[in-house]
Length: 202
Image 1 (cartoon, helix red, strand yellow):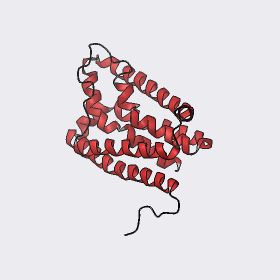
Image 2: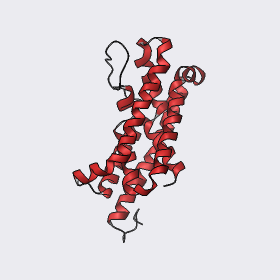
Image 3: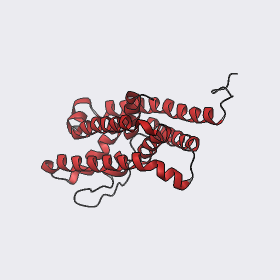
Image 4: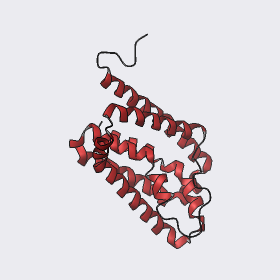
């Protein structure tokens, strides 16, 4: 996987467009002058968590005795479920009852940005080709930067495009993500059964 492909994949998994309505809902109780600072803080925490998984994920695999094909299949299944949710349900309203005051770590940094699918994706990238960690780190930084820009200007974005356009864009991103998930699953099958043709010819 090239660095551009990894950046696009991570951007799709983080799903900033799908998180725009959720972020606006959570930050509704936060003062206008504090919202940007809160967003930057949560983005920094999420990025730090994903970097931790990027470099520590391989050791977690060794401790759990999880093979790379197993992780690829599991990651593909997770991405596929996330993609189906994006297509048919839209942005899921996790943690609807938010306590008063500013949100801290939960639910904006985790799991909205650094969710299970994003953690599994960076872990999988590092497990496949650990020597290319500078590229994966750059891809992660680029994806988080793009997601951060969208979320920082989410209020203007939703006024400019409208909620219908954002929902349609999220559905399109979900369609793209389904193909990525299927490819991850087939890649694991090719590793397990190299002599077979995947997908099988009928």
